[in-house]
View 1 (tube, rainbow, N blue to C red):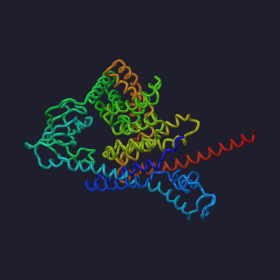
View 2 (cartoon, rainbow, N blue to C red):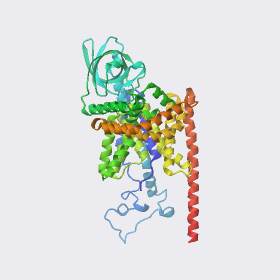
View 3 (cartoon, one colour):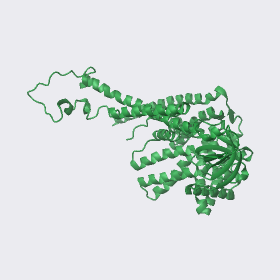
View 4 (tube, rainbow, N blue to C red):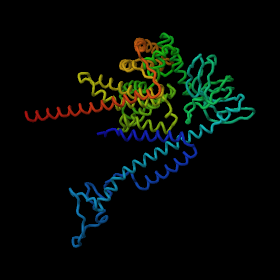
Length: 568
């Protein structure tokens, strides 16, 4: 039987790593690296030399099974007791036959019982040191970058690089690009580098996608939105001129862009432009076809998460794919392999959105558990996924999309079951679980949105209860349409036509929710803390009420059993 998910343990691991990353991003990178590596080495040596991870009372310890002295330790290995030899004085045992606290055995047991606590503390310190080291290395690379040093010199530089993120449309029709720069030229000098720069190109520059190689001439200015870990580019390229461009060298990137382009064309052919943009955005996170009016409507209604890929997309894709595999007779190892391949392909197709990375890491851990039969629970998988992702890419700690994804998922896993218990028992458990999951996700995401953006959508509290379950169908149909647009256009057309009624309902619900009085509120200053405090208070009350209901249910169950025994 699987043990309970380690709520405090998992949360403490994630909080420790996040704190280490934040510290490493703020302190001097060189000192952060030296101190963190030294501390990690010392702690690792302590853990290895003292064996702090051992069980406190194992068969080979001073106390054998059942709290008795093992024969090998008491008499010497292989040595039998001599009947004619007195055993000497023995210390009296404590209550119940256990060694007394003042005896040697009692002191040994106390010391061994303290070791796991010490091991846990040293483990947390090691994780914190690792987070400091990883963030310190990243912050040092960002500070030592070439382009920020060239920003104050003036003049025009020539840069070569690749498009690092999916282009997005900005105000006045420009196209925002993040370029991973590899080569820089200025005044007859050339440098090899590896850093990121942001640039806005005119729409007539033509379509660009992730992995495309570009050559630009532009002026370099420091960005006021840069962060120490490089999540946002440290420099902006002004007055750019695109000299040349070429497709991506990577075959997977070219193939994924072909699928995305075919999906856009098919959606525009089979659906009105408004609903075509909604379908492609929901399925692939591609908002290039999304109109500004529809975007504002969904934002006012608190439904912007519908327009971007998230963990729900990954769950829908995995559920459909693995369901087909089970129907075909696939066994556990094959299911795990198919699921991991689906997660990788979907992440490539959606351009590694932070929420997809989080969901993909969780799904991979769960699928490995399916293959081995020893997988983590949902809460443990979330904690492990966040820990691994932060160590792999510490810049995610500053990503709003990543924080929202983690907060919403945590709300589903921790608060969803509590909310479901408080709903009327006459409702089917499936309905209660779905409503509880939606309420938990909103309770986790609302404080993050309020603190980061100062926005609170009251209409979204109700609208999400209807929209989230309804959106699963067009999400799946959109993925099917994208996958079939290249190889089977009729199937893609059928998927688009089937999704059209659901898209129409979603647009109508968003319009209705956005038109409600006070649908969206703007918060500033200390008022941004109000949603977080409200969620904490409601959570405490809900957990107290759920515990009371559980005790009452247990009491009634015991009474019924007693009455049944008396009747027999």
